[in-house]
Image 1 (spheres, rainbow, N blue to C red):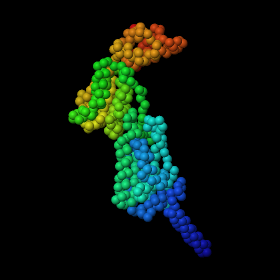
Image 2: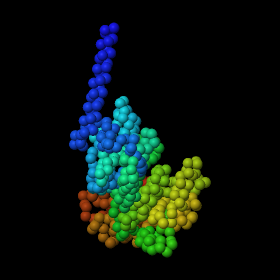
Image 3: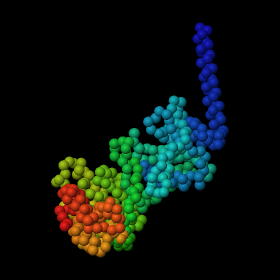
Image 4: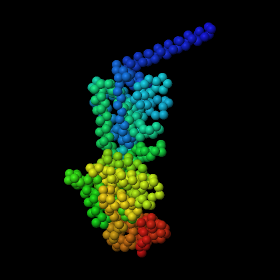
Length: 485
């Protein structure tokens, strides 16, 4: 009995000491300033209670807004711009709890938990490439204790999405229940909304969407910024009629788009580039991406057509924009040649997106194909989706002469040699001529002479490209069935 009595006394003493330490800790926290808690790992509920005091947690209203995960660069820039100016940061920290599978929400942080409390931790950042000189550091999650015009409030930023996935960034704003608090919450969220709508981090750049490597839903988790080569107007070697058609339907249309809109004309445009492989379709797209001032270029590969809805949301957000889909015949071939319902669903998705654009959407659709005869008639034969088809033919003699001058090193060829190359490359593609010049130049370098090409260099280059590789090699290089003598 004495033994049990001592155990009971020890239990009471332990509970009393625990309550005393809990009281002292809370009392000390309640009376400490931000300098005293800076850097400490503490329960977030206690920090929030101290920040809002004497307002109780039951008098706090939380407003939530979710934004696409891919726009986190603009979200970060808004945070950097807003906080620290009109809004005073009293304390900032990251948030985590030990056992949860996902980050806690602001509501979770308010709740006091003995077993698994939300704790303040150092904030985590990741570096994001937005196509500028230095990557942008973007916050993964954080909670700010803030003050504006004498009113204390909090903002929490965290990833969000279905269980086990991240598809967005979530802002939660906690304010006292008052008209001033409601106005403050709306004002802050409106600033973030406007920043995302401006899309300044990606506007005017060349983009494609990333696909998540951490789940199998195919949802986008970011944006890749591409650096395409600079292609000048004089580097686009096409027949005069093709160039005129291209200029009128793309460059001039963009230049006169506003006036056309004032006259009641649609701002959207669909163009189809078609012709044999290697005739300059992709090369011309690089030129257009650099010459359409103020346009965002969005590149969609055939395997990413499942993200078409996400791409079109981005195109509308960052308009004026140019949406490029190369080898469109891979998903838009004639329905009778399709082998599954999934293929037809992808085709319908493309047709609906092109047809569903509003008349005031400043969006170019540029589609390319090497097999125009295989395209679905609903795409290729209906104005409003494709408004102009532009053929990219094999280069004629004048075109081949310009291509030789474009690709040959300065001083390597005299006029007679240029004429010989033009004669011997009849019926080949621009890509073939480019590789032919490089191959002949390599033979020149290998024999120790880097001053000029010889007839022997040309013969060896043609022999290697046209005969030693067989019919397949000629097809790969864009020589077709022609065999220059």
